[in-house]
Length: 458
Image 1 (cartoon, rainbow, N blue to C red):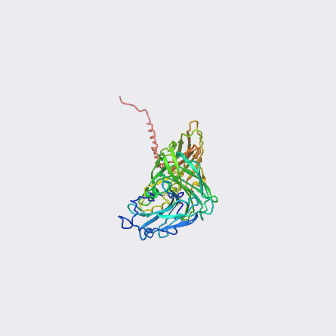
Image 2: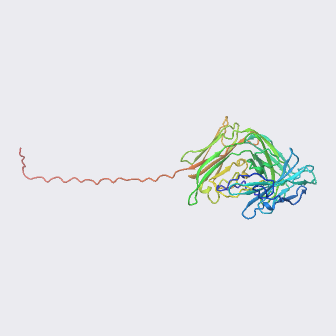
């Protein structure tokens, strides 16, 4: 089942890593070394018109007993070197299988094939095994293709963004359009199963009828919060760290699809390659908190002409680890049509939060969370420098800054997200000592006078 959980990241940080550690793929039967599957891939149909749903299943990849498995399937059209991904789906374990939705933009005159991989989760590592491809015949639709997508641009800097306009999503139950950018130039999407491919961009928008416009920031900058768990199972902040943007120049795969919250189906649009020609100055920003202070200072540069929009988030440890956790943003363990979220088998001491870079530009991109959220528009000087300040209302927690220079879908860019620790030591109690004054001394009374005429010898 596809779960749209990316915008609802649980920040307690005790989640397993999302990377899928793949063993050597095997297209042979169960007699192959280490193989756990048979070549028993089943398709509910071997042909279909646009809109048809094809169920792909395998009895040997159904996760029987204590074995945790899922099936990842792709529909690939065309002939090399012009093959491209037309549909994708993943099973939720069990015998139900994965579902593919035939799109209306795929050329029925071109050959097509269904390719599948079985993933088996293990305690030490994970195994991926491939099935023999199954031919599939895409039949002509009733009219001209309606499932179209338009990119605002396909060449840009890392740290910038683009928009994708989609139309024609007639998938039952769909309410969302998602765009993902992967670190591969493989239009077939095969490499997404062969190994865990990093995601360098992500955008999401609600469907308006059968279409939507999706903002897609190209940034993998993020930050982490190290967590300690005491013997009493109390969580405390151990430290914070920042990971700057790191996207080399190159060509990257972009896929767009529409889906529903509870649906196991996704309708794919034609994939697109985008070119990264360099990097914007996304690291020209710093957030600091002076020792033993609540004052948060954030300053940036390299944004001549501005404007700059800043979101300062401050959240106490009590709210961060409370029943309504904060920082519900960014990328985390999630399921997509390409892969299921890895089940939690180990505890992690660090929670990693990627930038939801569209937060400042779109209120709908932010999730409800505890803590303080302050939106600022600092003055930008002629050289492109700016600064902003916020004072938190707690003594123990973290502060984060998300900033945007200008229009990132044009010449602007998203700054790297920043994080800093807020920790004010409690005042040291003092004891005031009051000196007791000495008791007053009473002088003795004068001696009584002697009568007569006293004489002195000498």
